[in-house]
Length: 164
Image (cartoon, rainbow, N blue to C red; front, side, top):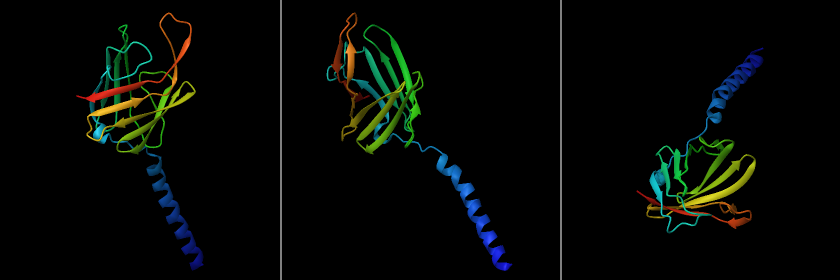
């Protein structure tokens, strides 16, 4: 009888620990920005775009990791979108329909990105210079159609951002 009571007590203690620990593992872990935090503006002369460069390409990264992008295209169209990366999790992009991204921190100077744009998966990466003054985004290879054109042309985008 005493042995059964001890087994029951151990079982209840183990079950209680599991119940308390389960919510802790389900909580997403933030990816603090570290040296990536700040406001970054594209140097279009050093960058490679698939068409005419935007007039404004600015990225702001908050210390908590939240990324906000503001772009004004060469024809004056504005695009604003943002996301907050989470460790090991694909997160939705606010301001873009059916687009998610998973950011994978490789080290303090490189992040890989896995994008899901309406079911199409692509990968890109960003690097940070050792002095923390230049961030370079290496876009996924793709295709581009020139305005008014009918032919798809291959491209790969490289955007060099300078810290403000």
